[in-house]
Length: 206
Image 1 (cartoon, rainbow, N blue to C red):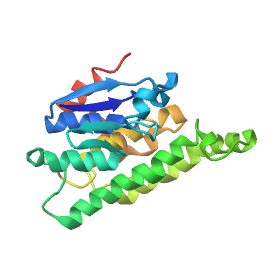
Image 2: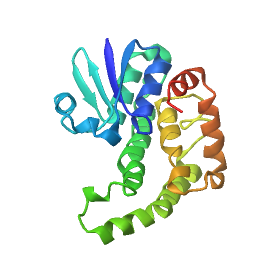
Image 3: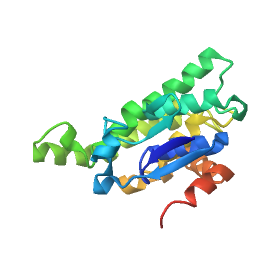
């Protein structure tokens, strides 16, 4: 059986949603990153990167959200979570998820994890102050140019949608008004209403 290492409030929510959408049989291991579970020896033996998500499969451990999402889509093709029969369209899905991973998530990380880039307290504080402005720029690009609608890739729900839903959900906590992104706000409500997503969110501690 698959085993997903997940932390509530983290990007691993996207992988959890994908597994549920696919109808996969999996075990969920909930991590407490505030207690530094990700740095404990038992977890480092699974994922030396000290991050979530990590997905244990019968062939080994997968890490990095875009990789896990693509693997889920390819492993359960009947779930139609990606345009697997169209190489260009699948590459577009990968490009979108890579942007979320490499740019949007990193922008958010500057809020509390500036220590990854500098040990200067003033520099860390400056990065934190810049987070809302940088996130607004990222989501303005997504809203105006990258998001096709009603789903990320157009008419069909895909692995991109749960991932966008996850990162868009971080904006209020970062001091960003989501009302300035009406298309993405409607998308977030649409994703939240899906049965698989409702099932996942019902497990989240209040």
